[in-house]
Length: 222
Picture 1 (cartoon, one colour):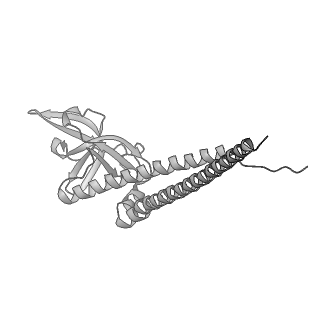
Picture 2: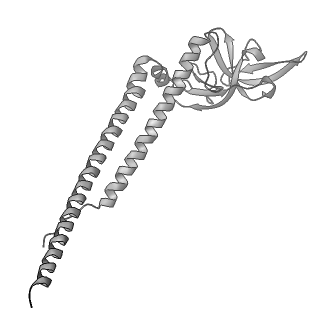
Picture 3: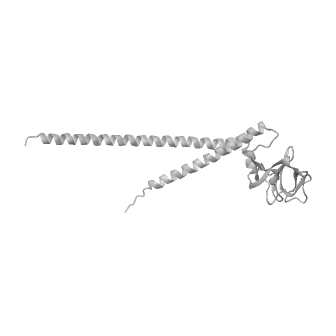
């Protein structure tokens, strides 16, 4: 006995819906990257002396191992702009050591002199404390967390080629795929509607012919 296997149309529908949800999620993620990256790039040009942020959040790429094992080289750390009064001993903060250097170290002591707060800091992996205290005006934010090992990729992503390859191109491909899929669905829907209209017209014609035939039979002499 031969048996034929026919795919379940419900499974196909569920698969298509799952692909659609995944595609929409990726599209939203890529759009957010473009918005965040674009905002920070614009701010870097408008305010060249400030470190750009997005709604108070600032990502930094770790280039040294001074905070190992808490933070590793190549990580991305995320900080949030915070009032200096809220910083406590043991917090990890990001600050400007000089015009071109940003450091993320742990607070070992909070110093208050004449109503002004400053912080003594040290890298977890360093044997000695930092040479200079951190003033409130050089504070960039409080450490929130890290994303391990994606710093180099993030640096490439900030270049025009990186944005083109990993953000703009996938987003454009998804938009093209979505437009094509919608067009196919509309064509199938139009074709099905045309078939239904043709079937309905055929049924009406058959019914009318049947009614005319019955009328003729009733008019025949008995």
